[in-house]
Structures are given as C-alpha cells and as structure tokens.
Image (cartoon, rainbow, N blue to C red):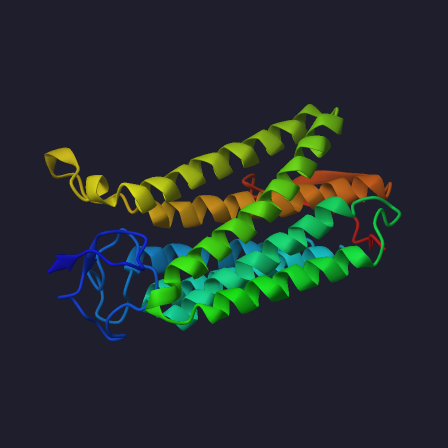
Length: 278
C-alpha cells in the first residue's frame, strides 16, 4: 500500500514493506524501502553515502600537513557520511539528525575557512563564537522537532539555516574565483560548481518529482537520483575544501601546487615537501 505522508519528502512510501528497522519515522526518499535487503531501508542511498566517508578520509590523509581547520573540514565530511549511512539505512528520525546536524557544522567550518583565508585574522573572536552559536541554536531547534508532527518544522529549519551559510560560502568563492589568474585553478573551480549544480538538480528531481521518476517510460527503472546526489556532493565537497585549502596556502605565500594521485584525484602540495602551513 502506497500512501502519502505528512512528514515525508516524497509521496512514495510503501508501508506494506517493513524491514528490520520497522516503519520509517524519518524523511523518506524516492527509493522503495527494503527493496534490496531486509536489513537496509534504502540500499542505494546507503551505499552511495560511503562516498562521503571515502573522500573525507582521502582529504584528511592527503592534507595532513595543513592546518587543523582543514583536517576538521574533511573530517566533517566523514561524519556526515556516517550519519547518512545510518539515516538511509534505517529511516529512523534520531539517525536523520546524525546526518543533518553534522551537515550544518560542516558548512559552518567551510565558511570559516573561506572567510578567514588571509595571513591575518580579518574578523575578531566574535566570528568563530557566532558560528558556534549559530550551529548550536540550529541544532537545538532541529532536535526540538522530535516527532512526526514537527518534521516539517525541522526540515524547514535545516534547509533554511544550511542554505543561508551556503550563500555566504558562495559569495566568498565568487571573490576567490575572480581573483585568480591561474586558468587551471579557475577550471577546477568551474568543475566544482558544475558538479554541485548537477548534484543539486538530482536532489530536486528525486525530492519533487518522485512520481515521475517511478513511472519512466519503456520500463526504465528508478535511476536513484538521490544516490547520485550523494556521489556528486561528495566530489564537490572534496573539491571545495581542497581549493579553499589551496587559496589559504597561496595567501600564506607557501607556494602551493596541485598534484594528482593516479591522475584522477587532485590534492594540494607545498613544493612537494611535507611543510606545515603554520
């Protein structure tokens, strides 16, 4: 039986299929629950979440000799990935918070790295304190929406608070992009933007047009666009953190350069030596 839900992202929830974790209490996406495994609510969305863990760990490993702020940024992606695995694997609301709350703090960390990228502190102590308070207040409000009747409130608070910080990050990224004369770096910024744009498009189609995605012509199966959103967002997040790391090292006159692992994975290097940026 497929019925609409007042607290779901989609109108495609099959309550007749209940797996190991029971009926969903969290936002449900455009993937049939327990369709692949009795133990995994959304198999493809869960599997694709591992991409965040992988890129986050690679980012930490390849940039271990940089400032702690970047280790935290890459590490935050890992935490988001773990939360996303738990959320999509169970569709339980408490574990949805394990996905969304780290997302808020991840984008706040990226915002700090974007704004404070000069050799000197551009803003006072109030800035990191304000960021921490913003994340704390957002978390409290999200956790307040602890039942199905409040899921819409939680969803709106999460989306609006996250989008607000994304706008701040985007405004600084535009400034960074405009200041660069290195065409290779600018091209990487463009690739990052394109990956973000396509991934967000996948998210929106899965979120808003699930009824069409599930009824594609010629028997075409559901392309699992939310899973592709995970993969694209993982790559874009890695690229964003890496390029901000490059900009910081450039501003510190550390002569950074982009090196490639296996010809496919870029990372920032300092003259090929393991120099500390601080």
